[in-house]
Image (cartoon, rainbow, N blue to C red):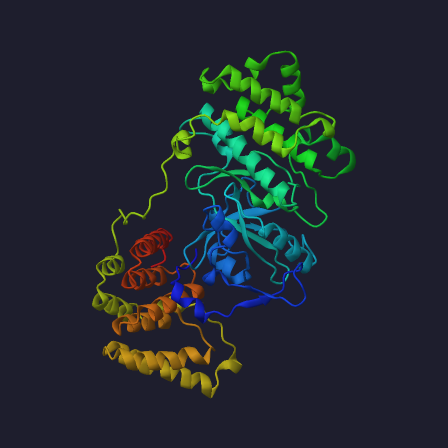
Length: 506
């Protein structure tokens, strides 16, 4: 889970100074923290609001993925996969995909950062673009745009509502060919383990190529993890990926799209040589496809799967062959996929709200004040482990400041409460999510919503799955006229509260 963040808060975060490994020695690049991420100029040229590439802290990504919860895993490999992909949400509400590598997969952090920076320079509307990385300690993570509508493998092999229609099966390879051609033109022609799981669908249902395949699984790791039957023959001979190897893998995706099944290339080529193209076609299409178009795709797949790499087409050949097959260009991809386009704004919660939920939805600050007084500090249990040595005079003074703040809070003297709670927080010995929540409300009462949002976010950082932190963010966002974000945050608070109730935690 990530916090939501107002753009006004970026000034409170220090930016990391990092020099691009390939820039001149006299120029340094600022790596903005996720809260201050902007739009990349190159991305703007393609009409995509892609954030600039930046370095993330491990704590940011840990918070965004709810401590890398198994519930946030989106890769089909599961927790035992060599490299697991999680979805997450940053403080500025942006959804992300986080690829977490096995421990010390890249022992040299500079080498990992250098590779990530090269891939991070790529920006294209056909890519699920890389937007950052993390190299904290032994941790190695990549951060990319999150694609909410699953993978090509899911839609082809594990569909529940409807299979992919023919027009979409022609659009997918064209878009992926355009992505590969762009990468090749930018000097990044190698793609590791291209398969149907690497093709993902964005919020509009448009297919995109995952940027994760532009980097190896590790410094010395294998480039292919799929079954040997689908691996380029030259890779089996010398263990090296070449641009021609990528074309071979593209051919296997064409077979997937034609057949709706994962057919070994050798078997498919036998069928093609035997002029049994019709047997190759997916029966779920029920004959609703053009034989002429299918023949073009079959022939292209055959060329891609040639044993000799030099006999395969290049990326420009792929694009030129597939472009004329882009039928129904005016039909949106989400319509072809049979999915609903992501709503412009989230809906309000449909489930019954708790007293806190009702108070937040009504913007009833007085009711919120009463609830915070009643809950006292019971939610702070376990958030601090203090040694005996830490119980110093400074500690006693700090707790006394909190006590004075509580008296002022109870008596609705919110300015005094802010001062006292600030004394408690500034010492830094003990972190209290409740104090942050209380000071957040005080700021709201004093018409300082941006400061209130900052405190509510900090409460979440201390206690990542605390509904109160999300509720307070919702109210602050509403006060900042960020209604869509406020409703979305309220929804998250309601879901978290339901989970706590089901788990027996009051």
